[in-house]
Image 1: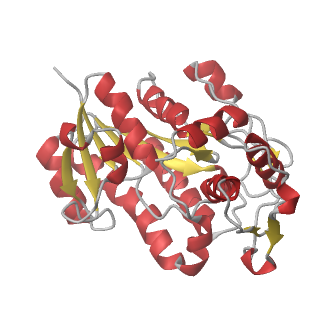
Image 2 (image 1 turned 180 degrees about the horizontal axis):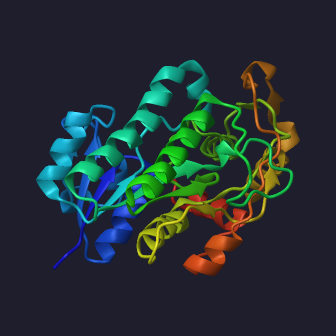
Image 3 (image 1 turned 120 degrees about the vertical axis):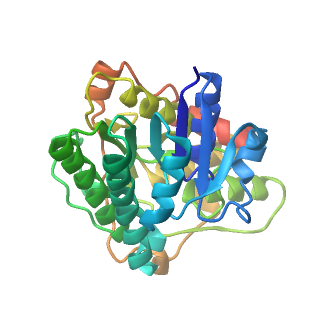
Length: 316
């Protein structure tokens, strides 16, 4: 019999790549969004997957809505990718961010506890939970988040761990550092940089306007990272894992690499706007994914240069 996977937040980049991955493994995939009747599911359509999954409306911060879908489909695995995804927007919408992420995972865990404790649950955490990590963060590194988004993700990880230990649920969190893909919308900085460089190469007189380019991040490819999510739920016991490439770069270096791909000198086209600085930001973000490398037999397949090439080549 096919396994059934429920993907909460299927409309995002991770949802699309995870759907593709699970369908190739012969899963039946159920995907949810807050309103499936109006959500465009553009990313699924780009992979021609929309007609291969069952789409449902589920409001993650409403317990009855969550309970209804889990009872209806009785999935063997649940992947929680839902919630507000932008760190910058989390400063503008802190309450919505906390509700969509923290309250959402709490409802999922409660529903599983009451309906069927055998359902395995994956929760997407974030490297933003750690805050500054000049020493590469592993699973034992303390959480010191610096944004409403990081705080909400940290709460979701603590909640998941609590249900694992208190109720013996198979639930775990992937603490994912920055991961990108051609599916990212233009509001995300990596896509913004690549689109600006292409436009300039094609004759546009525009400038690339950014905030703090000295920040350091570990950027990976979303298509690699979804495999780690699945691997976590295939383990004998649930544990949390840091998922990252293990190599960090400054945003300025990312810009430089992108513009070099178009044979352009980035400083000629770059403008710094201090109004784009966040109220509080992580300056250095480094990760240590050795536990995932060793226990999950997972590692990132794409370097930062591979990632840039992939986005340039497949810019939908």
